[in-house]
Image 1 (cartoon, one colour):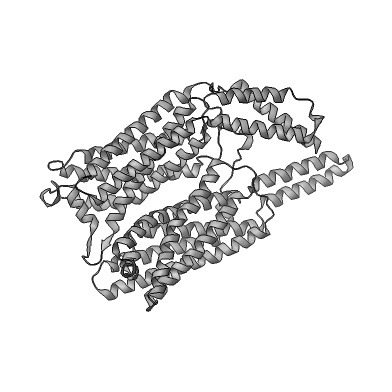
Image 2: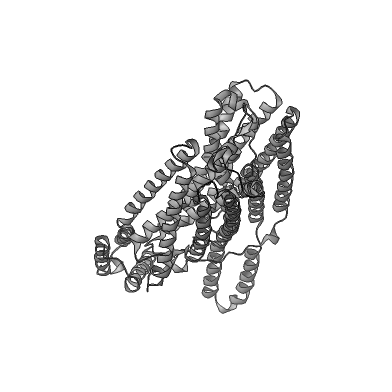
Length: 580
């Protein structure tokens, strides 16, 4: 025990002394105090003085370093973020529900200012801060993985296409409407280029210089993306929301008002085509803003953070080991797309029989998907109980954010499901559509709980490659300790152990199959509501029970979080798949 404590102590002292020689630390009082603490630790008595003293000293230094890294900049940046978010929420809400006092033009002017400020800070960071010596001495290997950057790039390209369609559409109204509506997508397109490059290059940075200014810039970036997300969600929700009694889409009314009403006509014939096109691309822009917000938050948490340079491990993606999970998942996606297309075609017809048939197919398909997900998740949870991998001791900001977003975003779908359960039960649940709606809501609640447990448990398990390296390290020590006569026999055993470690065990294969299946299932559950499936408004039991205004508010608040939950689950399940 004492030997282990001595090694830990020497490692910590070497680690901190190296950081003091190489890093440039701001002249903050907490940094000076930390330096004094480090000098005191270096003048301690010999390591043989006791394990308790060594452990207490190490924990104390860690606490002092943590306080030094934060300083006062985190408070100022937090205040800036909260104020921007509240003001943005007020403007977005006002422009949606009050077209006289606050219009879409006021909201877009505010967004243009935010986008320009964010781009100016990103340029300053890229040109000045990141070029300073010792400014970025550390990289967080867990932040901004390749698959997340690829998703950001894909969603960014589709968002850029959306802005192109918006510009082509809005140009047709320049003769009778504000030029701001053309300027906003132009500025947003430039912002997409700048931010995607910035996050692609600097997502892993642990900045040690200009920390307060960097924190403030990152929170402005975070709040800007969240305000853009709120604006996009609001426009998409209004576009998809229909008033049953009037049988007209609220979005059409908002759209005409925002372009001068009936008096303002488009100057070219392709306006309606461009309008429908960019509305179909809104889900990708919504996901892009959330991806960028998550990456900016992780960068903010990593400002001033000291990380171990040797903590990075390359994880290979080998889909050849899988068979059943991806096949079942792809079949589920194809079946879901077919039923979704049938739903979209039939639900638009005025014939009540066709609408009921569309709802019947949609409810049955969702019940089948959620039921299969529950079964596969239970299998995965049982395997976790049989798995002997330790829980990871290090908690990275990216994993903490993944868990927080997973639990928080699931609340939106929980809210809709529980409100549906109450409405259907209170009305007696008569009729097959009500029974299917109730079954879907109950199974969704069960599936959300099981999937959250499965993903969180998977993220907190020690990655398999770490366990493999530990086993190889143990084998190497065993080879050194044996005599020359036993070396040949031990080498053969070690090579056999290497082969067995390289080949996934049955528990690993089952977990990977479950992850792959759940990944595809969450993709189809994201596609259907993201591209227009709204059974919450097409089936009127909740509207009659809660009245339209209240139910529309519940759905339009909860559903965006539910849609984000599915996409975030896809990312988290891919992460669990890689470390399993």
